Amino acid sequence: MKRAFLTILIFFAGFGLMAQNEIIKQGWNIGPLPVVGYNSDLGFQYGACVDIFNYGNGSNYPGYDFKINFEVSTYTKGSSIFRSYSYWNNIIPQGKLFVDLGYFIDRKFDFYGFNGQAAPYLKDMAIIKGDGNVLNLDNTGDVASGLYALNRGQFRAIVSMQRKIGSTRNLYYGLGLAYYNYDYKRLDIGKYDDQMTLYELYCSSGLIRDNEKGGGNVTQFKAGLIYDSKNFENDPTRGIYFEATLSAAPDMIDAKGYGHLTFTGVFHHYVPLIGDELTFCYRLGAQNVLAGDIPFYAMLNTNLLFFKKIYTESFGGSTTGRGINRNSVIGKGVAWLNVELRWRLTNFKFINQNWCVALNPLFDAGMVTQSYRLDEQKEAMEALESIYSFSSTDTDLVYSGSDETIHTSAGCGLKLIMNKNFVVSAELAKALSKHDGDGMKAYIGFNYIF
Image 1 (tube, rainbow, N blue to C red):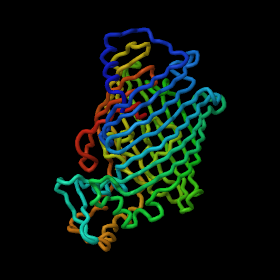
Image 2 (cartoon, helix red, strand yellow; image 1 turned 30 degrees about the vertical axis):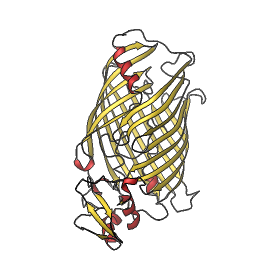
Image 3 (spheres, rainbow, N blue to C red; image 1 turned 90 degrees about the vertical axis):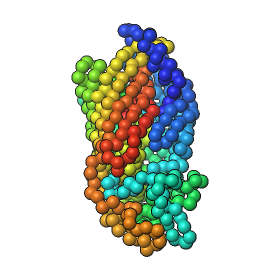
């Protein structure tokens, strides 16, 4: 996602500046940098960001007193990011505070339908609007397809904290408050004006209700239990992280009847194989709706107290299922697995900072474990045929007829790590089934995904 020429400069210059003694950072460390990067789902990225660390007297290095990040950037496929987040380790005794504030514009937000394998993936399919209610299906690939896209805006404000429980060593309780505003519209990029999108078909069939198709407001009250024995926060080489969070979202603003309770759990395990040089690690995750009715726009979000990536969407894409179509595995319940072998190739000092270069082969897997309006999805095409006259009815555009299965991908990443806290990441991954995506996908961004 970031700093192309600077990253390359540091990467190659570092090998000539090898050093054994680590620099203990103290006080302020401020890094303003240009944003230059790439994401296969979003396009090329450009903008600016700044990372601000305060390490205090250095006694807890690579731990810090607080970290603040600001970013303004945009992608060539129509997404923009306006975000600030911060971690404060010096406010809550034996705990930390996390604050996240952001506004996200996505003019070509990916929407592949509900329930994973149950939603067909019709590569290059374009539905061209004809006279009246006539819809012409074009799968020749000659027309750029906007079938799996819509326009989404999201405002997000999150405050989360954790504090140690009594005299326990690594056990914490967590509390959080989150607010989301979602704004959904049909795709409004000029070259797709004459096309019908899957989002519109879902709205026409009733799979997406009239009172949710434009988005809405979600307020969450969170309570969680956390176990954290990682040796480092952002570049761990050993230890366990476990978070189990209940998120209550009462219908207190929109009054649409969409109050709900969700459970989200993650388990990270970092197993050292050769000292701190080679680490086998994995993340198991699950999210389920326990009670109430959840609108489709809230179902996409992963409701953790703390997270490392900008986006917190469902399975598929750079933060969960690398190489798999973004947000293509969504349901009321989703489970996922991420596996990595992290090999730290070399350490060096450069520009008065501690650096490390690491390689991480990876494997991701996930599936829907709790379906969402599946019975309606099976009957949706019949409802659509009562509204529209299709040029061909050989293809069910909404339901594939297949049962859910495990969606998998594999690839490899390269990391450049500064002071065990700042991680520049480049990853390549490919879905292992054509239903989940075509070709190799690339992601250049920040941080390990867990």
